[in-house]
Length: 364
Image 1 (tube, rainbow, N blue to C red):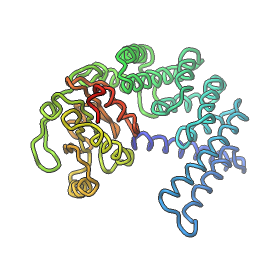
Image 2: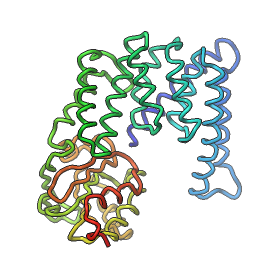
Image 3: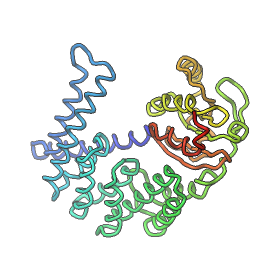
Image 4: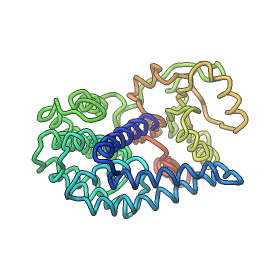
């Protein structure tokens, strides 16, 4: 997930640079730049509080600031529906906005104002950054723009983002029919808009990769491919033997990754709640080799009782399983079929997904 966020941060920096250039030319701040400056100042002030805030206090205060400014950026966007200031507000919301009514409304503005955008190139490049955001307004907006926008590049970018979101949601729900729908959308992207580009690259390359995943051995309903390797303690590992007859959570994770570490309590809960003869967790670890001793000690200190298999961030298992963001989870049923795939901090949903694959009598 860090990879996705770094792209979004880069977009905001680029957008702010454009605003600063404009301000230098006419001698005054744009409305977006003025509001962005207020937000940045409030966030930076948290570093200078006396006595210093704890990490948790700082995180809570930052969340409160971002929540307030999500509303303010939404209000600014509503005032500037007929110029491109709303696009800058949408970019900020995509990176730092807090989900809720104002966050959702930004994507209504996006849908309603897309055809009025002067900078259609920026709008086109931005579209793929909505793939991992959570709002029920995004899919309708992308669908409408893909069908009716006057610029082919914008239509193609919207269709790709919609196809990628459809795939992501179907895999997380374990929805085979949704995966088929995603395949059809991706095939349209490749056929109709192969040369359209976004901040993540060209549609042809990106859509082809996603389509290959949907048709690969790690697709929903397929038997989990073999994994053989070495655990972090040096023992030989064979996935098929480890998960045989059990519901399995296969976690592509790493201690370098904040969202991965944040999921550790949930994974511990799973091991505490369900009997070990019925449920197993396997972590495919992406930490670098020179960090493994520190990781080993942390595993012992934190009492992380699942199997950890070393792979490295660009390792063969990650490549075989088409993993490009961490954490990524595969939920496998007791006969070895992949039932769900999900990316990011999915919270206690992970417990529910495991429980759904076990008879009620099997849980403790």
